[in-house]
Amino acid sequence: MMWFFAILVVLAMGGVALVASGRAGSLPEEYDDRPDVRVPAGPLVGDDLRRVRFSLAFRGYRMSEVDTLLARLAEQLDEGSRRASDADEAPRGGADPV
Image 1 (cartoon, one colour):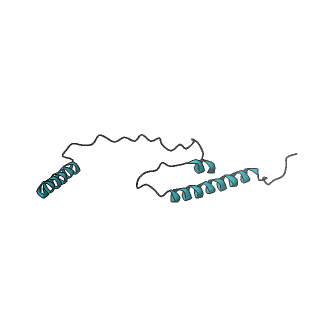
Image 2 (image 1 turned 120 degrees about the horizontal axis):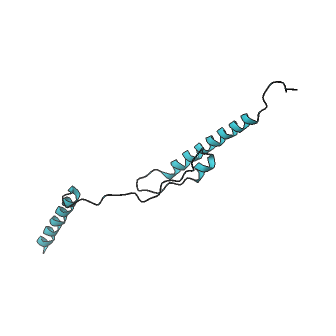
Image 3 (image 1 turned 90 degrees about the vertical axis):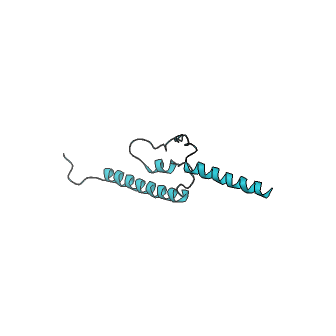
């Protein structure tokens, strides 16, 4: 009975090796059925980055690192937008034409 199990284990290991080497046939072509991350077209603002959520994946990126980077980029975009709007609203020097 022990010989039977030994032969069974050897056959199982051979089958795994055959599949792993690709000689038992190839797997069907993989295709990605997940939607892309939706980011609005045109100039981005901080709220656009705050709403972005990436899909989870095995051995993907650490979510906390991605969230931290997105928060930092959103703050920089907001600061740049504030500076641009302040520059547009600042009075320009010179005399008023009469």
